[in-house]
Image (cartoon, helix red, strand yellow):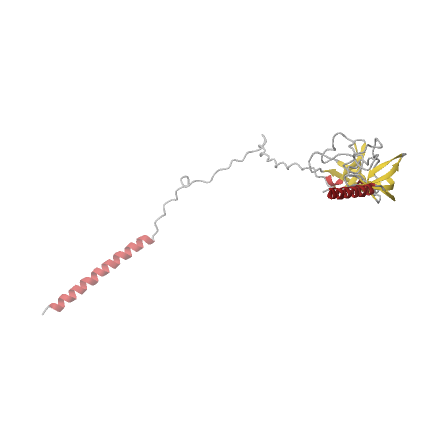
Length: 264
């Protein structure tokens, strides 16, 4: 039992010595640049870890170049580096740094000379800002109204990759996002009024009014006079009488001939 305890004590001592060796700062010699994820800067601390106090009241600004002379892991297992900044020395978390310069490159500005019209998607208007991006402050408390015509004299792209234009509105110059504009006038057009139908003018007092008469109805139409009898009607009657008489004579002679033939 005693022998097992001695072995465990020896193992613990070895582990302690090993941890102590690992905790010893390692020498280094390279440069880094502050690139904090919060965009504010990086704290300089008295030891390699957030549990140590700050060596400066203000963080080291973004994109500052620092020289690292020693490195050591914190209790949380993160790498820290020993450096100097403006007469103060201390430790910075290397997770919040890069070995290349992350400073944003200067935007390219292009001269322009054209008009645009405000056509914001929210229908409220367009903010005029002090720089080409939404991270710049507003130059007016109220946005430029919808459909306002503006003249663009310069353009550039923001860090988000959107095109912005430099313009002036009511004596204030600044930048507007050209994504929220159009090059044509988007003002809604009023619907066309229906044509006005004019009533016919009344005739003048000295104009002769021509009365129009409606066509006569069948009742009002005059009755045609009766047709006059012509001489052809009398001749037709006489001819009929003659024919009847001839028929009678023929019948008489036929009867007489029959009687004569019957006598013995």
